[in-house]
Length: 274
Ligand SMILES: Nc1ncnc2c1ncn2[C@@H]1O[C@H](COP(=O)(O)OP(=O)(O)O)[C@@H](O)[C@H]1O
Ligand SMILES: [Mg+2]
Image 1 (cartoon, rainbow, N blue to C red):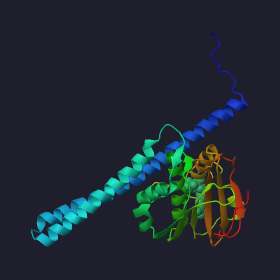
Image 2 (image 1 turned 90 degrees about the vertical axis):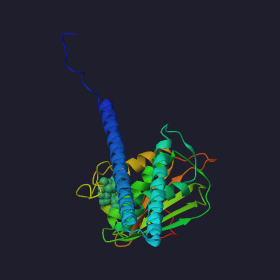
Image 3 (image 1 turned 120 degrees about the horizontal axis):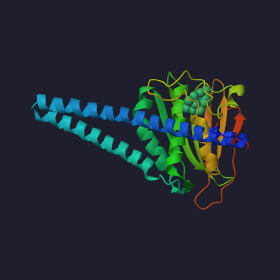
Image 4 (image 1 turned 30 degrees about the horizontal axis):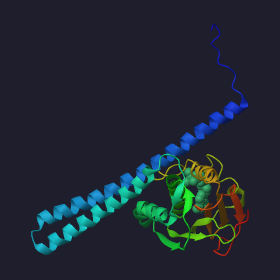
């Protein structure tokens, strides 16, 4: 016990430590971004309630008061929807996989980001095709979806379009969720690095506190791999980027997966190669 020098750390232990550090950074970033989004959304709802309550007090006529109550009611309903989607996130903390309707997850994510996307002039188009339930941890897939939507929004600072689509892949029978934007695209040399931990082309978090850490896509990849699914990206400079998630259905044996990179036009007819 005289020698207090710490034992040498082996390479394997070092790698393990770094992995744990990355996982912590990924979790903290996801939590921070979610907290930022909801606080912002709640503040907006609160402002609406306060302003229309003041209006109703100032103006005694029935028409104005009716309008004020309607606005307050709508704001309250929106707050409830936000709470529900957050509770949806908090519900599954066990890490268990369960049969999940991805259309519902898409809906929840869009409720959370609705105002933010409108503010940055991002038009959202959802194309939900019949698809079986996916066997996933809903909380984690929600996190992936939020990451992809926020990345798409940040890639288009002057606005643009995002198409979120859900379908069943004919070949693999897996559930396929795609987030496609018509932003600037990603150059080939960068495309190979985007899943690397801490790789970011952003200067730091934006005014909403999101992005710039480079842990978003690495977390997405880790999550999708732990589901034995696949995350694919296809991008064309000047045209846009599409991220596709393939996830096992609730009644299907999963396939192993690593991120797949496809260069070329992210058109809806393209099947990313694996
Ligand atoms: N939809 C997209 N369009 C263009 N570039 C993107 C898109 N999504 C991700 N990227 C690129 O991938 C990088 C890594 O993304 P991410 O891991 O989420 O980190 P961060 O968002 O913190 O920069 C981004 O900095 C950006 O350069
Ligand atoms: Mg990101």
